[in-house]
Structure formats: C-alpha cells, structure tokens
Image 1 (cartoon, rainbow, N blue to C red):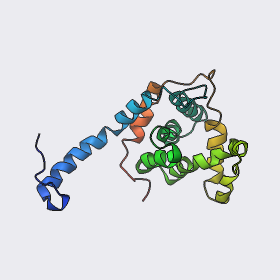
Image 2 (cartoon, helix red, strand yellow):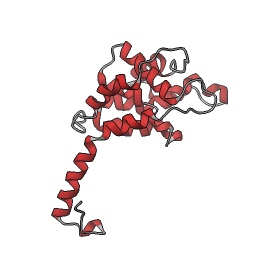
Image 3 (cartoon, rainbow, N blue to C red):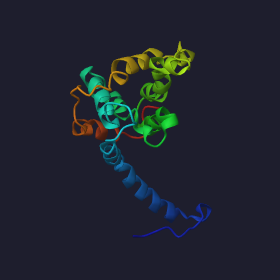
Image 4 (cartoon, rainbow, N blue to C red):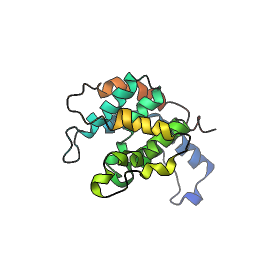
Length: 186
C-alpha cells in the first residue's frame, strides 16, 4: 500500500494529503460497522445492575422505536451510553460527540445533557443535587431531554423487558451514519 512521504505533517505534499483523504473517506464509510461491532461487545455491566450495557441500550432504543421516534433519535437512544466504557465521567459528551456530525442540534443536545438530567433519579441518595438539570430550564430542548430520560433511559434496566436485538437496529445505524457529516448543522 502506498504511504505518505512525510514524518511531520508540515512537510506533507498535496499528493500526500490527496492519498490520505482517499483513505479517510473509505474509513469514514465504515463508521456504522465499527459502532455496531463495539455495541455488540458491551455484554458486561457495571457491578450491581441487572442488565448489561448492551441490554440497557437496546431497551432504550426499543422504547424510542415503539414511541415512533425518528431514525436519528432511535440511533441516539441506542448509542446514548456508548461512552460509559471509555469515558465514564463524561459519557454523555462522549456519545454526543460521536453522533454530532450525523444528527440534529436537538438530538445532539439531548444526548450531551442526558447524564445531568439523569441525576434527578438518584443524586439525592448520594448527597448530591438531584435538580442539577434545573440550570437548563428555559432551554429549547429541556422538555425533550426530560422526556428522553423519563420515557426511555431511566426505565431501561429491566431484566424482563423484551427488547429488540442489535441486528434490528443495524439499518437505522447504517442510515444515520451514511448521512453527509454536519448536514444538519448548517
């Protein structure tokens, strides 16, 4: 395989960067497949939960689908906790950054802020502020984020819930990640 000639980016030529751009475009086309593979491996969980991270994600996405959410919100529900594995202290922002190029500002904001909104359900038990989300009152997507957490996310730890399988969500993931990056942000 042909490789660039430079060892420092500042020394790269137009030919080098055209080559890299070609490879990057091909790599980007595989994003959906890499995400699906990663999700398929989330079979473990944090100690104490009754379901795996994958099952929680599947339950959340299944609830979104049953409520007739749009495709990007179904995918966002599936991926909302994808950051738990690598960025547990800022998992919401991690998930939102993965989704950002392919979803609307609304969906991005909901996923980015859902961790703060989820504090409502448990923070008071740990001596923390359960109303941390109140700092966003009045925001355009405040109610949508409340609904995301209440209807889908916080309910999805049920070992008896009949969620769809990851393969059922593959077409949604492929569709959303095949969009032109940032098409919604213009």
